[in-house]
Length: 160
Image (cartoon, rainbow, N blue to C red; front, side, top):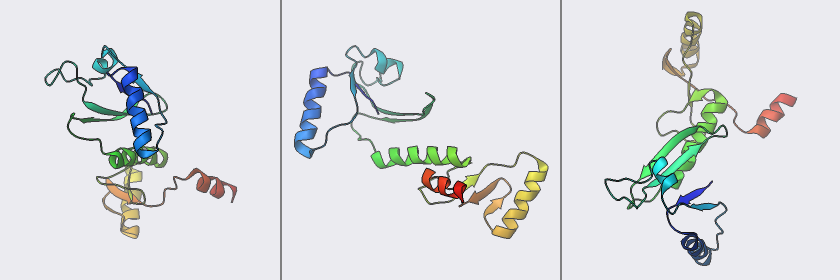
């Protein structure tokens, strides 16, 4: 995690110290002072319609390859939803690892949407699977429950 703010370094230090005094929590990530707003403007974090100097609250989820996978934009007067941000990170990681999609309102443990078949033979196999397992509505919308996402569990299964 990295924080970016158009406030000064002194302001960041005071904010971090205040959090520590009131909660006992040390913020474990760096906060970058972007005093002239150059970085904030490049990432669309300043809404000129609202203000030329105040940032909106943005959250960028960037994967290990440097690809922006999700962006949340909150107005100044609305706090971020940390559970939704964490759910999104978990959904992205699960979907990638399991080569599937997560449906609306997905949380860990819920079924995933299987990738669509790419050939007619795969389509016929999927239809048969749905009839046998009752795990879908159509060849293009079927679900799976059996994706293991815990690396320790995967290692155990590989050794067995």
